[in-house]
Amino acid sequence: MMSRAERSHLGDWWWTVDRALLAGLGVLMTAGLVFLMAGGPPVAERLGLPTFHFLNRQVMYLLPTIALILAVSFLSLRHIRRMALVTYGLGIVLCIAATKYGPEIKGAHRWIQFGSIGVQPSEFVKPAFVILAAWAFAEGARRRDMPGGTLAVLLLPMTIVPLILQPDFGQTMLVTMVWCSMVFVAGLHWFWVAGLGGAGLLGVAAAYEFLPHVRARIQRFMDKDSGDNFQTFWSQESFNSGGWFGTGPGEGVAKRHLPDAHTDFIFSVAGEEFGVIICIAIVLLFAFIVMRGLVLARRSDDIFCRLAITGLTALFGLQACINMAVNTRLMPAKGMTLPFISYGGSSLISLALGMGFLVALTRRRPRTTLLNRDEGQAH
Image (cartoon, rainbow, N blue to C red; front, side):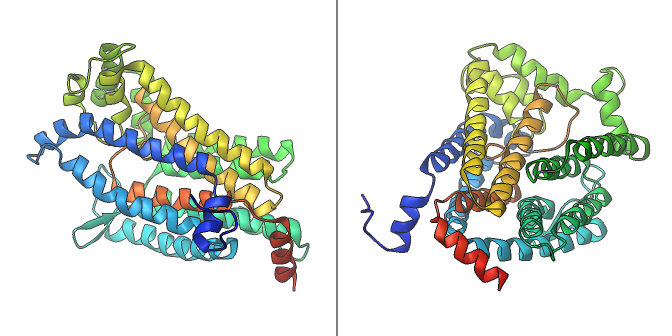
């Protein structure tokens, strides 16, 4: 065990980091590997790959994921903002490049290739956007000469326009909801919150009217007979056949009909083989991480930390809610992964960046450190 008197960087980190938050993330990653052992083999066999191809690659992705979370968690507040600024700028450029040069997958240009490696830049834009928006709101609250609120407002269209061009309506909706949660925490009047909600509804109506793939997904969700509902049908069948206690590991049948059983619909695979009881446990685990983040945000005396923690926690929690709602047919299909459980390199690394930011921001810092930092910024 490390002594509290030890003044090394590692010692300081160990006694200031929130270990309950780290433990929750660790359990989530472990659960992801267990579920991928069930959902990955059928997809690998259909593609002519080794049985545990996706599981082995996920383990490989988890090594840099854990390393990135730990490395970012050591950063100071200043370095967090600088890293977010660089990541955001690079991510937006790559999002725009993907619309012109990226491969078309299911009618969208969301990926960009670097040789044999595919990257979805929008995944990295999300956590960086949260940090920058929190920074702008906080600076606007601290300094009257700083138009922080205006910058925070401008950040939203700067972020979602490239996403709409791809098009990626799911990520656009997620980023907008996270931004609204930060606006609410920043102290915006209820009148403006209602106005933002109305604007969001208008955006959904516009997407339905002008984006054919959005209209098709909503119509299929509202009317089962209006189009191809293959994945949602088998997703629902997974829960029906699994019941409360599941069919047992490796005994699932519905998963063999799900093309995305290892990614977007891995929660359904868990429901079939491990049962609704385990699915409820996973929901409670996500809820624990979200509630822990919100509690730590409430305890923070720093405006920037409070807003950034809230935004990152909302980003994590809303993404999980959207994925699970799609799996249980409470929402139209969105093509969004379940954090740390679904297979995917870009998703894991971007989540590692966001959770690294969250762990760093929730570390206990002496109030004098925050005051000295604010005085240094004022000068």
